[in-house]
Length: 197
Image (tube, rainbow, N blue to C red; front, side, top):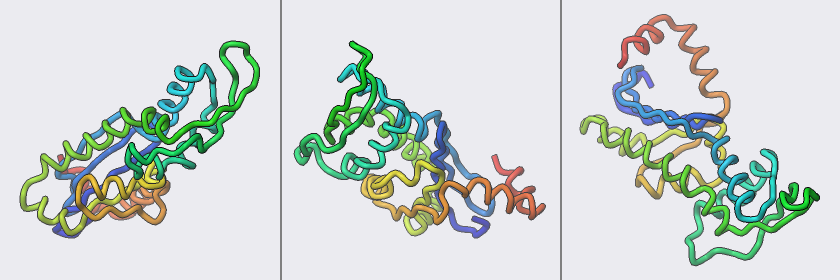
């Protein structure tokens, strides 16, 4: 990111998502929101609670998100399939354990609001990018980092939505820590980052 061209990094953590346009080791523009991978899980939990009177845990929501994520994000509304994934939890009416099948359509409904907020944050940051740097981004694209970057199909959705190249970093869950470590080892890089707005 020390090169003169611009790069866009989208870091999707558990509780927040940060979008940054970077150039010359500095941040040119950024957008941060309090929506992350945990919020996707919570949206699933609440949707199933309201729609089925079934309380599921975080693990079941995460499994559902990962199992159907690419289908939900990539398949059009007319291509919804039948009940394709089973989730288990506690029936809120009688307190007994129960399992249900969750359709692609239901999961898409549950994830609509947080995914829209995510895409809006990316758009807001890109819209404020100076034209000369926006030209660089056409070539360099977007790099996804953070645990949420591992959601199957997210890179394709972002690629289709922005018409930009989108890459998931090699170790998305460790990028922030590795970058912080590198900055601590390079005082000049740390000063350049501290000087950026």
